[in-house]
Amino acid sequence: MKVSAPELLLDAQAQLGEGPAWDEARNCLWWVDIAGERLHRYVPQSGQDAFLELGQMPGYAVPCRSGKIILGMKNGIATLELDDAASPGLAAAQLNWVAQPEPHLPHNRFNDGKCDPSGRLLAGTMDINEKDASGALYSLSPGEGLRVLKTDVRISNGLAWSADYKTFYYIDTPTRKIMAYDYDLASGGIANPRLVVEVPESLGWPDGMTSDLRGRLWVGMWGGAAITVWDAEKGQLLEKINFPAKNVTSCAFGGSQRNTLYVTSARIGLDAADWAAFPASGGLFRLETDVEGMPTFRFGD
Image 1 (cartoon, one colour):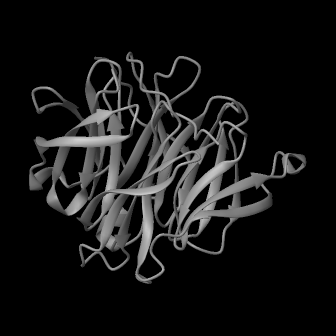
Image 2 (image 1 turned 90 degrees about the vertical axis):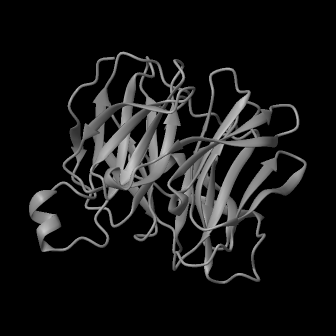
């Protein structure tokens, strides 16, 4: 496997950069700064990054088949209609709430979210204070509403599928575990949980995740200044790619050949020694690979 050194695309100084999602229709990358309450759109062809102030924390942003963006935010799941006339800037035309499942949990927010090939959204919540297991993993099927897949989650994070879509991978960060489930693409159900990887403390905390077509999992390492690559079948560490950012948060494949890995990072919680050692923390990165990654599937609205 060939992987280039990470390239800093944007010294974004994001407080909590997260949720990269490649938009094939627009040839751009959506990503969020959760703590900064911003939705970002990065266009590789021009190198321009535009952002939209949302007024509350977004955990993820996923493109929809309709051209809208679906967001998981502090207060629930919403679709955002964009004002295309604002290009190259970024402006909202309308925000519509789709589901607000946790009004009884004011200290929770949505975190990572991703769509399966059928256009179904899987997204999880977490305790903002990262203490209580008050989060859940939800499934939102177009026209069918929201259902709960998993409860008692502390920090719902990385989601990915195998190349045949029959296996779903999931991370609840404080467990340090990557779990696998049988996945029913027709119904969106998960079953038969089993441990795939238990991440050693020396590598940091497993955060956001994606997969490639060769059965490997690519995981951002919070506190570990790296992307780790794992064999999903054997649970073996294949590669550790070091970054000049301490908190590497998530990654997604994009580009015309889907072999470019875009990587987000965060600057929140760093001290002076961290800044000296990891000056690009909070930046947006990319690296080139010789593998084809899984696509960012769009929400089927």
